[in-house]
Amino acid sequence: MTDRASRDSAPEIVLATAVAIVARGQTPDEDLAALLELATGAVGGNQGTVFLWDAERGDLVLAAAVGFPEGAQAAYEADVAGNPDHPIARTAHGQTAILGAESVRPDGAPMIGATWPLRVAHDGVEEPIGALAVSRAGAWTVSESDTTLLAAFADLIAVTVDRARLTAMASERAEWVERIAHTDALTGLANARTLSRVLELEVARAGRQGTDLSVVLFDIDGLAAANADVGPAVGDDILREVAAVLAETVRLVDTVARWGGDEFLLVAPGPAGMIVAQRVLDAVAGRPAIAGRACTVSAGVARFPADGASSEELVTAAEAALRMAKATGPGALAAAGAA
Image (cartoon, rainbow, N blue to C red; front, side, top):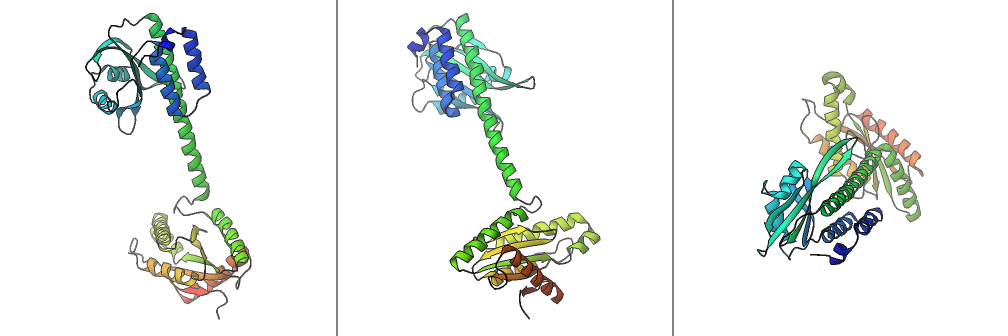
């Protein structure tokens, strides 16, 4: 596709337009498409492509294209990715511009192409990221002005791609930090800080709606002895196993978190707290032994509002119930206020 208006514009006007696209960018895909179309028109091209390295696939992938008939892009991408001698592949690999390479359009018409490497620099180290390619139907002697424009557009495209990647990385890191802030690193469950907020919200909602709410405190029986006898690595395996059972066994409406060293806390809306707690105890007891040690948990249950009207009162009541359960023996369950 030849953009004659771009071709007839002075280079400084073309580049000013390109800089404005980068500076006032929309989405990365829109910016890339706009830059490629402008670059293709600026040198009188009929077709233009941007190929980028895909680190996961280890191949070149087509990131943007102009001037291709419908349905032709996939075949062209496969041809470039599968042919190391293709000018685009050679430029992406060798990071050297290739000017005046002969090719044919999908309809068989002869083309003359120019390819330019795409690269970015971080801390003084250049990283190849792909190639820009523009082709023109018929004869084309690539001029010095053409090469200057292609080099400038290659830099602007590389900056656009790099900015999009850095933005994506920053977003992923922000999500990771957010997840870490709410998650226990060893078990993958919510942490105590997160569950404290959930418990406060659930207590407030149960108070407004006049509904039941249970708080269940689980304690792994004999974990300190396991750490002393067979080592903390086995203790960590036990913690992860119990956490997995909890995550698999509780209901979708429940929230469970690691509460302390060997304790887990469950917030269970509704009247089924004792049932859910017993289900967890049975599921843990049914798991295979770890390093020759059978695994059981004890649990104490407190109910809103009978055993406490606030989150602090409910946790205190659940702790008292847990002490009663552990006094009974491993794998026991007790309710707050029980005789």
